[in-house]
Figure (cartoon, rainbow, N blue to C red):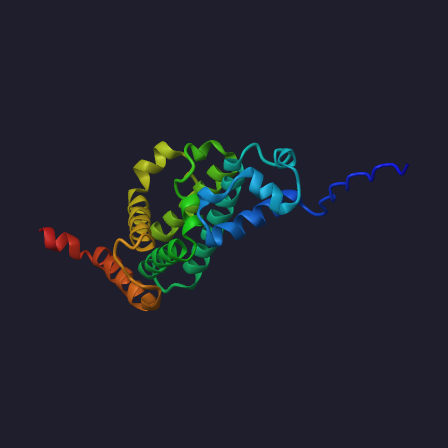
Length: 213
């Protein structure tokens, strides 16, 4: 009598498992909601066991915060480019806010992950460092000189209120546009960005203060 056939061995995953898990998560976030992610789904699509996932990340939140840190690093680099290629700080701030709105509209799930989806995100060291560096670059756009103490939150709240104001404006406009609270269709992209520029210019020009005087 022939011996029973052996069960096929699980195919060994070749490559960088941690990076492959992030790549699959990013692909899913392009078309689905962050709530559609799970450890089991990511492991299955990468071709590893759920236990293997935990060899690389403590939790799904840890993987998402690693992705969020990448987003913040990209934003810091983009703001550096904007700073180098703008004729004035006003122009740099305007372009930075516009880019923030475009991130939220083009990649809404990544925007959610990077800005508030995961509670207590700053306990993750890499995310906190990326967040501090991104804010420091925003403050540099506003104040015109490098910021060395953005990670000292008590000090920065006192010293860089204008930068917090710019971030608040950018975040508020990004949420409004990405969630269609001010409705613009995708075909009206240019009109949407003109609207954003107009709102920003009202603040940058001091028109709000004159209206309230």
